[in-house]
Image (cartoon, rainbow, N blue to C red; front, side):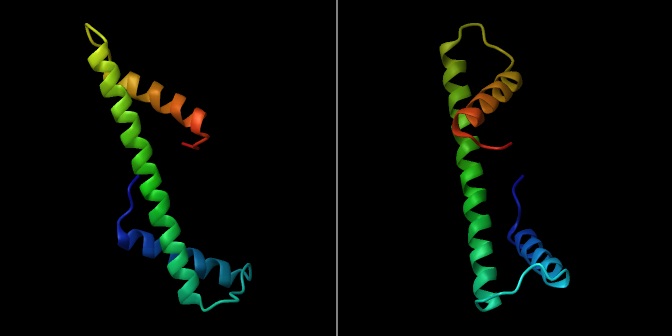
Length: 92
């Protein structure tokens, strides 16, 4: 699921707030620096997921071109996605 910038900001703010409220974290750095790093990590993760999904689509497209008579694209997408996730050790 793709998150908007606002949703990512809200998520990080909420997590930080809960951690501080429960006494789970004490920031050794300025909180804004940690916030920026968390946002960067979320964006990078989202880009990784998008690249993974693009790779799956490309593989399904290649299979579709090579397979005469066609197949159920949705089922094949799920199968390829699951197999690739297992190979790359991606948690879906």
